[in-house]
Amino acid sequence: MNFQRIELEQWHRKPYFEHYMKAGKCSYSITANINVTGLLNKLRDKKVKFYPAFIYMVSRIVNAHPEFRTAFHDGQLGCWEQMNPCYTIFHQEDQTFSALWSEYSHDFPRFYQNYVRDIERFGDKKGL
Image 1 (cartoon, rainbow, N blue to C red):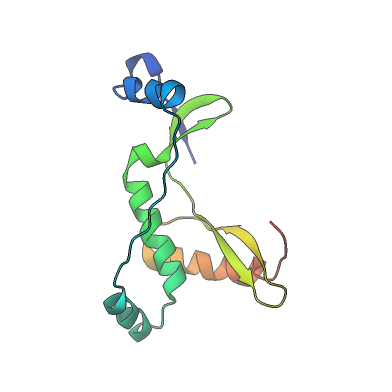
Image 2: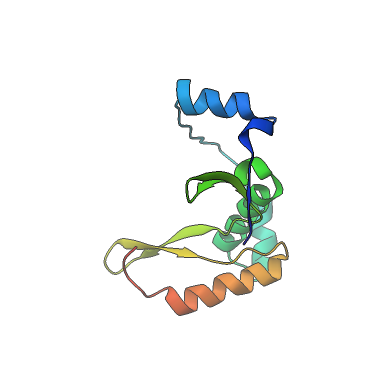
């Protein structure tokens, strides 16, 4: 993945960046009720699991907007070319979870294959 450094002095978002880095430290969260009945029915018909489809949809939105891919890397402000999702899997037997990463692809079938492969390979590994 490529990381494109942002030149802060020429960046059109500089005033906003400085405001939230210096004066307005904040966090946010969102809770929303979403009716996914139609989506669930279509996914069932195609024998596709909801969780990886949901991860894909969120990842697709994140990757569509440079603002969501902006981060610090090695102390430098910049924008990643692409973000890969990190998600949790639950271990029913001991009530713990692990975090996994899967390579993002704009192509849903490829992303789904990546997810399935990663779950098969790492799904039984315990710990973070």
